[in-house]
Length: 388
Image (tube, rainbow, N blue to C red; front, top):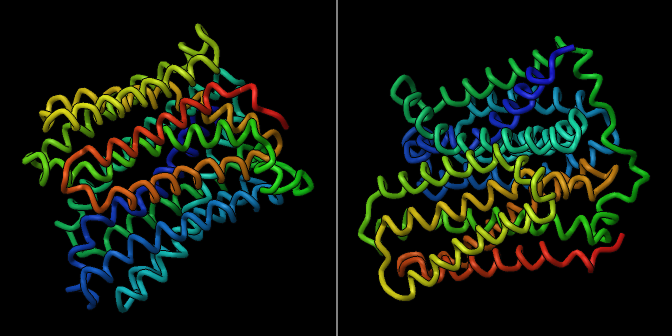
């Protein structure tokens, strides 16, 4: 059997290869119409199809995790993801590629759903919070580094190379699990299907409070991130370099906080730590809103305020995710799927809501991010409303 460290690395790499499904391909999108026909609109569907497939895949794998062994499902997910990556290279058009990408996204959801559940089963509460902090750190770096790697791959060959790389990594991880049967067998059934399914989770107010608070805190951050490139370059007369500095600085503080979150939990307890982090993120969002209302904020001020948004998420993130999984009880594969789906929905709806206003500055963006973050704070202090 592999050591816990080696097993954690395999689990983390599985989520990374899934996340890279969008970010690694991103630099190739503008050139797809020339290679496969169509226009830039049809090329964007290649990204949207993957995201849509992932959203559905979360619920599918959450349900499958209740009925089949997680280790077996993970191998099948990675293998399917690899095969679909290879099939994508044979696509004759952007529409055919989008269809393949939908199913590729569905397969990619498996590692994302199972990783937190596997970690929870490997460690005690403190160990799980530490491991989830490390997993979050690794996942936060992927969107920053994967496009850089994707752009480099484009200098070596055409758009297909990124899919070949994805296929190779996915099949290598699948083989690693197959060749470690003892390790794979330790991850049995997440739960039994008789525990009530998704409907039971929607009746579990403790789970919903933790899950939605987690999703709204991360969603508030992502609403800002997704709007920032346009706001900075158009409304604030900045450059993409300013956005990159904002991102790199924020990620650095997130990683620092996420990897020390367990120490805060040990000193304050889980609930106060979650509230502290959530309040810190909300404070950063509200401060950005106030600064944008008063005047056009300096880029340096945005960098500073965004640090607080990331710092708060890092403090609360590992403990918050663990408490949501804990509240789901034996229903944790479905619980993990719903938490991630809530994040996706919050981000998607928030991004759509601010889309008409991004050229006007951060006022509307920060207002909506603040509203979401404040609701997350309220949910973090409303424990008296919990009941199973």
